[in-house]
Structures are given as structure tokens and as C-alpha cells.
Image (cartoon, rainbow, N blue to C red; front, top):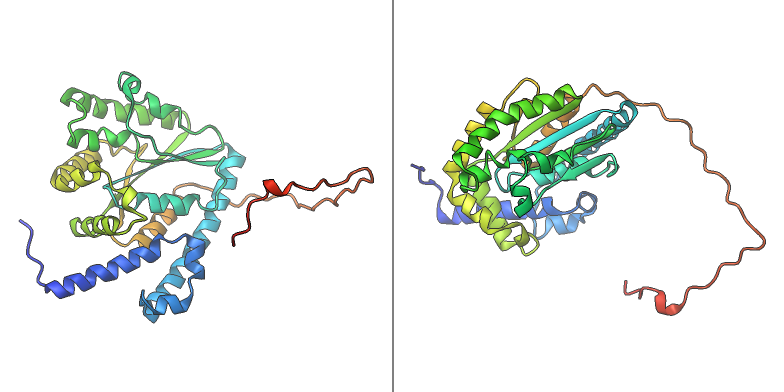
Length: 308
């Protein structure tokens, strides 16, 4: 049984407002976050000097790690490495935010994100792993799965979208499937983003009250909130039955979003033996001018109005 919160109603409202404002800042694009006017932060959002310094430290470390991710990308291409990174966790656990920071400065032709929708009628009759196989990396690629084949061990189990036999068959098959990938040279990293009951409630409330985030809430998300304990049990079984040496699970403590991102990226980098790849010196060639070339004017009707 959940213990009552000793804080007063006013204190709870103040805490929720503070968390809402922090979440609002976090939702800005990374570049925009760096450019937010201090006067705005000092005003309605009310960041203290300590908060501002913590943000600066976060960005310094994030940009450093993103520089290492670029080196990792170059190494993957140069060595034809194949890397799969799986992100799992409860709704609003921060998987998407971590994926965004990983891919932000990488080449989308090298680093792809696979976020598959619910299976259609045809896919439901296929071998369960079939629709995921086409998204696996070729040589010189890394693929980040924003949820993965572990849907069967999580949402499908909790929401009764699969039978008991299908559920058991998944756990018989998934170790062999991942071992087969590993034998073929595909490296698999699996991350579970872990948040508390209270933290998920706060993040859901933020989505409800933020018009820019309401699209993130689905009826399935709301039902998952009601079935918190069932998801917990499903997660515990999943980690126990699919944690194998060839593809181990790693748990990211994700109540603090920024720390979770940094810790996840740092750990990901530590799992690949990459090094900096030397690039040939690049010189910009001179512009070629041809006497017979004349630039044609663009019709005014084709020009986008300069509203700003």
C-alpha cells in the first residue's frame, strides 16, 4: 500500500509547478536551450544560479559526449561495424529524449531510429521477429530501436495482446534470435529506463497540461498508468529471462532526465572499442566561372513571403 505523502497540499502544488517548469525548459531544442535569454529564465521560470550552473555543466558534458559519438560513428563506418541499441522502459521514461541527444549530431544515413507502430493484420500472421529484421543494420550502420521486439514481453503481455503460448514462445526464441545476431557480427546493447511511480505521474500530468505534449498521450499510455504493477511484474520477468551474455540488459536510472542521458551515452560509448579515425585533409575547390552562364531571375510568384 502506498504511504501518504507528508507534504502539505500547497507544497505538493509548488513542487509540481517547479517540475513542470523544469520539464518545459528541457523540452526546448538543445540549441535553443543554450540561447534562452537569462532574463526569461530569471523571470517566469525562476531558475536559481545553482540551476543555471548545473545546466551549463550538463551541456558541456553533453557536447563532449556528442563529440565522442561522432568519433564512434566514423569508426563504425570505417570498420563496417553493426550496432543495435534497444531502448525500453515505461511510458514517459525518457527513451525518446535520450535517443534524440544521441542522434542529434550524427549522420542519419549511418545512425537510424526504428520506431515501429503496432503490427498490421498481415504482420500479425508473420514470424514474430520478421518485421524487425528488415530494420537491422548493414555494415557501417547503427540502429536505435525506440521500443523493440520486447513489446511482446511488455505491452502485449500486460494488455493481453498475445496468448500465453505466444508469450512463452517469445522467451524460448529471443535468446536464440539475439545469439544468432551476435554470431553474425551484430552487437546488441539493451537499455531499460527506470523511473518511479511518482515520477511517471508528474510527467503524465505535464503532458496533460502542456498543449505541445498532449499528442504524446494515448489511451494506451493512460491504461498503462492504471496497470503499473502488472508492468512491473512483466519487466522483472523480461529482465530475468532475456539477460544473456551475448545481449545483456543495462538499467538506466532515469528519474533525472539529464543524468540519465549522460549516463546512457557514456555507457554506450564504453561498450564499443572505437577510436578516432584520421580523415584526409580537405580543401575547398575554387569556384568556376563560365562566360556563357547567366543567372535567370526567379519569378516573384515563386518566392516565399518574407513575413519575418
